[in-house]
Structures are given as C-alpha cells and as structure tokens.
Image 1 (cartoon, helix red, strand yellow):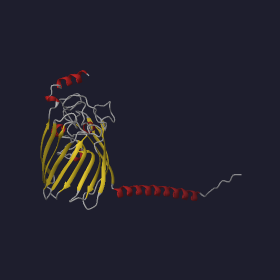
Image 2 (cartoon, rainbow, N blue to C red):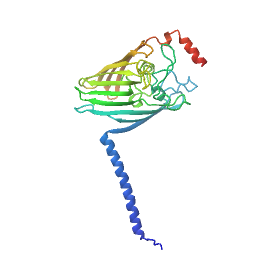
Image 3 (spheres, one colour):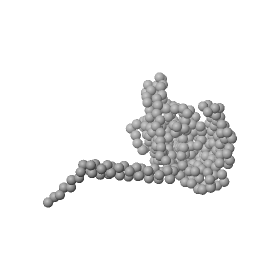
Image 4 (cartoon, rainbow, N blue to C red):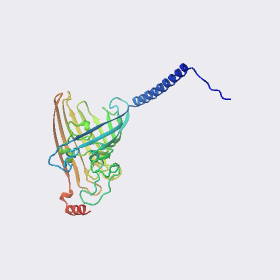
Length: 322
C-alpha cells in the first residue's frame, strides 16, 4: 500500500522559497569566502583587450612592415588579449614578502613578444640553432599574424635589507626604455622604431632593484637563455650564455622630472664571444598634468653579425631555395 503525502499549497510554496533562499545564501557565502580568500592572499586576476586599425594606402597586401605591433594595414587587428595572475609584494617595511606574476597573451602582438631570443640561424656564423620551446609554437601555426605568448612568469621577493631590495626571478618584461609591450603602459597605439629594432622586449634571469633614497633607484641582474646577448631569452636553450643588465633612475622631489639610464651587455651566444649590448637614456618632465615631455636616446652594438659576414649570401640562398 502506498501513501502519498499531500501538503497544502501554501506550505509547498513556503518550502520551495526556503530552499531557494538557502541555495542563494550558500552561493553567496561561497562567493564571499572565495573573495575573502583572494583579498587575504592578495591574489589578483586581471587583463585588457587592445586592438585597432592602421590605414596605409601604399600597401595592398595587408602588411604594414617594417613596423611591428601595428603591422597590419587596412584591416582591424586584435593586438592584445592579455590575462594575468599576480601577487604583488609590499615593497616597504621590515618584513619579508613574496609574490609573482604570470601573463598570457593572444593576438597579433604575441609573435613579437615570444621568447625568440634564440633565432633559427646563428647571427654570427649562420649555422642552424635549436630554438627555445617556451612559447614559440603554442598555437596558430596556420596564421602568419596571430599567436600566443607567455611574456611574464616570475617569482618576486622583497627583502628588508637597507631601504628595501626587490628581486625578480624568471621571465619578465625589460625595465629599459620608455615604451614597452603592454598596451596600457603606452601613450600611443603604435611604437617607435627604436623599440621595433633597437631594444629587448623580455629577459630571462634575475633582476634586483634597490631604492637608495627617495630620489635614486638602482637595478642590476644576470640574464641567460638567449643567443642575442640576453635579449628575449627562454628557459631551455643557451643557458650557458650569460649577460648582464644594469641601470639607475633619478626622480626629482616633486616627481615631475626623472632621468633613467640602463643597458645590457654580454657575449652574443654560447658559440660566439662577439659583444652584444646597448644602452638607453630616458629623460621625462611633466610640464602639467596633461603634458609630458620625453627625450629618448638608444645606442647599441652587435659584433660580427651576418651583414658583416661572408656567409650571409649563402644563408640567403639556402633560405630562398629551401
């Protein structure tokens, strides 16, 4: 014999509302606990989307070279879909702090931001090289324009030494120069030719920053993983080739004026002792809240590259015939 419990409609309605309220409360409690966890751990998630179009009537094949970043002509391009996870360190006080950051980038800028510091051919001898496996072939092999890059993956610590020492260890954006890869950190959509061909984008190694006082900051560290003198290195090739980065920044008391000098220097690769280095100077002065004056100077040297090498013609022929 079966018994079927019949409840008054008002009681059924009240139970349903109670269950719905409990479910919503539980979800809110879980969301609040997750939010509290992120707040307590200071773990942040964020990102940005950057895209645009460049009109160039002299180009009809869609290529805007030799410009990079804005390298597509007469069409829209998604430059950067960038996502990041980070834990910023507290860079003051008497307590140690630890953090780090990881960035993921998809778009047309990714192919210029990858760890391409080990080229297909040695820049001095023309011999083939084994390239880095960090982020060169993650996706989009059928596309000449879009790709994925992992431009930052580093750990960071603050050491209460003197006025405070910050140390990054891993793969990170270069601290040199005025312009940089992340779109939100640049005033213009396009970039100057100095960044295109005369400065590194990323490094692999260690970077230490020390604040001498409120006006002076010095930086230095060893770099590796590159066959271009410490530029745009990866994790698994050319680890026996070490270069260095160093520099300083002076800032006025009112923070309206700053002077920055930095550069890199080292041997080109494990196969070549030719020098590879550069320095840059950035002078900035904020005239008013909406006007910033910037003077930027870059000078570099790459010894014995293929343009000065008799094997260059043979490399061109092998590339064109291959």
